[in-house]
Length: 165
Image: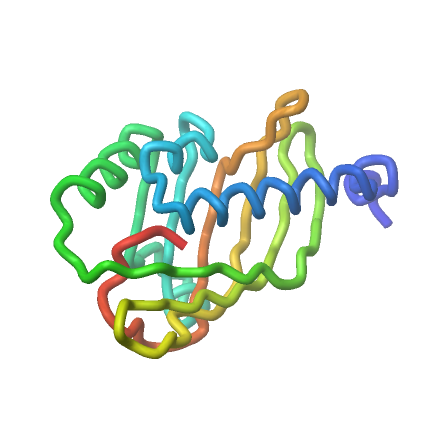
């Protein structure tokens, strides 16, 4: 085991804090609190939602892309103020969490997820399933995403991808 992956750097309390970050993040998304969404990211964060095929091909293209906090705020404002879509609820079910490494103030993690979409007068449907590969900045008691790549396992998203995953 390398020094970066020692028990002292990837301890159980850190894993609990990282899981809490994900839980708070998903709670924010489920509440559709788009004004709070950018606060989960560092000022220079990168956020990408892409298909597994694009990821495996090494392509940096996706359905949602933000580079820097200004793009996050713009995405949040555009979604909240100008998007026209059916009233929907998306529930997120986080899966297995793995902390891969810690280098300085950055923790690398992966987590699988399932997202279920519910629209009034319709049966709930599986919206998205996949995983995220994340770099999380640790600044004292504060954890925020420095890089978040969400990779969905399916070829198609049923309906447009309006809200972040």
